[in-house]
Length: 331
Image (cartoon, rainbow, N blue to C red; front, side):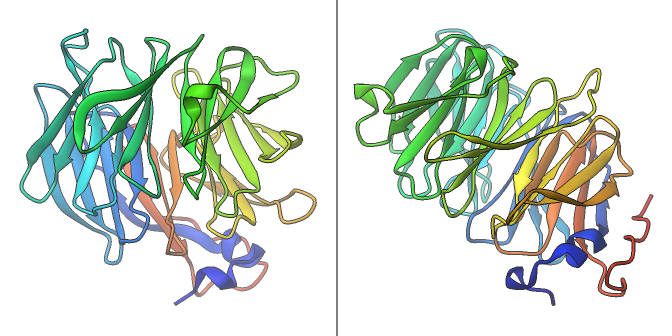
């Protein structure tokens, strides 16, 4: 079996579809891998949360949440519990976020406060804190152990949030392409740095930090992808993906931070080696349309991609010859 330490250009080129799940009744909104367990969770417009074992590519459980819907989802530290944002009944008294046990399909805690859709959700890698960014122009800080909001930032535009891999810093994107960095322990003192993505004022819809904390990956609502130096904010490179009328895209780092993969409006998944000068190494036909959700597994040589109502797992084709184009994935 290929290990993460062996990742190279040929392995990236050989990635092909190993499993397809097409039984969703609506668009897949988000997906997340657990940091230390080989499991994946998805949320979709059919109000379902689905739980997968990625070691054998099996759907383990499906739960439906008709009262609140399932909009965004992310794992907590426990591999059988998640945080999920609501789609319905969003007002000052509504439960905008829920802490759910997938093991016995119980809601462990409700979180109230947001008055519009949550569009960004992330869990601290080091403790029980998590953050949510909403179209009500606020970012809220929470703790899984208590219902009450622990802190709030009022912002302009669509806020997008992300913790770095050590949980010491978090980033918030806001109107005009500005990225503000906060110390997680003293965010109430305001940002300690602000980056601007020069020349692009589109709203940032996704932020990811590389595992080594040196780089940030930004994806915008007009399908541009930017790689930034996380310490100084310099733009290392940018990738202009084809636009798509009704879909945004997602980009992802590989766990070693040497590659970036991104969806595109052309229906392909593009990959670059960014270890030195960015160099495009692959253009993989997704076979399912525009990949609006795309994540590389933290502990495996695999990634998951979702377009509309179809989820695919991608793994290396061990029979591919070095340097040869990747074989056609499953239809």
